[in-house]
Image 1: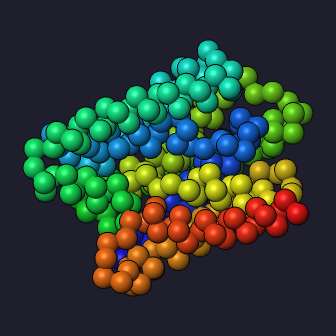
Image 2 (image 1 turned 90 degrees about the vertical axis):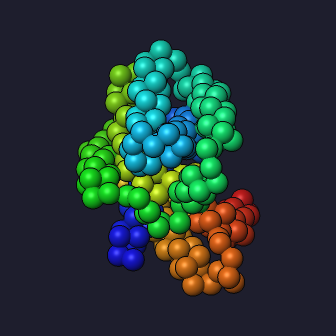
Length: 264
């Protein structure tokens, strides 16, 4: 229970903070950590590990997300932001297709169920080892430390007061991916909060200082995930409710109301 709540906390911070960094880095409200294929890579790694048994599910997920990060790192050195977004969408589709092939050739139903339970991101942490946890916490510390240390640079970049070099963007991307992978490799992909929460934060708070949005996005992300987790655990009406799907159902009406209010 306590370990599950720890990863509710980590995921609620890591994903929104990674998302707001992407939006500031791209100067685009559609910036999202999953846009570069990270979610698809995590699923592919988890599927390959589950079906083959060559390593733990979390290790397989981490290895593939790391490979995805390194590919995007080198692509960032060569292309502009618009081209990077296009590449990320195409690359994510390609990686997702590989994952689909692996999953549809599952040796048996038990392995298929194990994979889908991880993908549902219900914080059950089945099969997660102490080493997995320690490594995940190290990644989280590195990613969060980089986010805080580069906050001023990202703010100035977003306000077009300075321009981050291609190498600087690539290094920031690597740090963002470390932050997000710390949650994804353990809990599975959790949609919505890495894109929706940062946009809500920017509607609520008009400050361009990214540090303000770190605080607001983290508070909103943790709160939303905690409410969703409690609903899934205790108000599930006797059925299995995946975290991501349940969170979208809970949060989308709220998000729609805030956006409408913001437009007015």
